[in-house]
Amino acid sequence: MRQTVFIVMAFALMACGSTVVGQEGAGAPPPGGFARPGMGGMTPCPATALAPPPAGFVDRAEPLQLTDDQKTKLKDILAKGEETLMPLRQKAGEASRTLRQALFAPEFDAQKVAQLAAEAEKAETAIIKAEIDVWAKIRGVLTADQVTKLQDMMGRMGGGRRGRRGGGAPPPTVQ
Image (cartoon, rainbow, N blue to C red; front, side, top):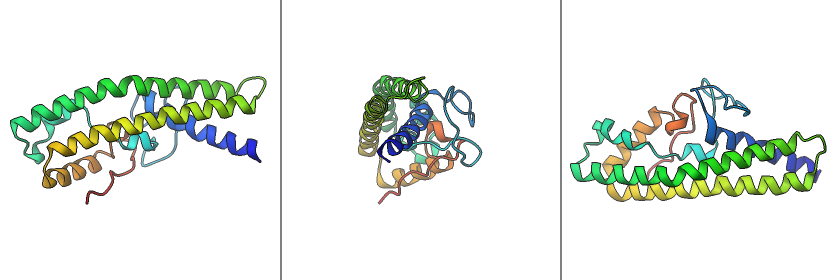
């Protein structure tokens, strides 16, 4: 029973991690990954559902009516966020690939799979924490009305950059 739980957990983490890192085309499964049906393609895991927009988003965010100072701050926050997130996403992708290799190795080692699943989970957690940190900084720049408008904009895009065409989870409700 315990081995089955580890296998199921490993598959879930593998699908989640491969979604985070390698989506080549919208709606297409990542290389070596699994498609999880959503509204037309991939359904992101929590790490991708929280992804902040790219820095270029600021220039297209007319509905937010950002001041020049806000635009400058947001571009800086988002650019630094991407610098932080890129290596974390790469690490999560590698952890997911390593886990997948262990799952399909000629000799199945449940202890090794469990260890690799824990490492993949840790890598995913690091991404989520970093994305929440970026969102906290974004929230520090925007007014409450702008946050509401941003939530609407992100919802129409599918919850985040990688979830646009995949019908990702909607952003959390702003209170």
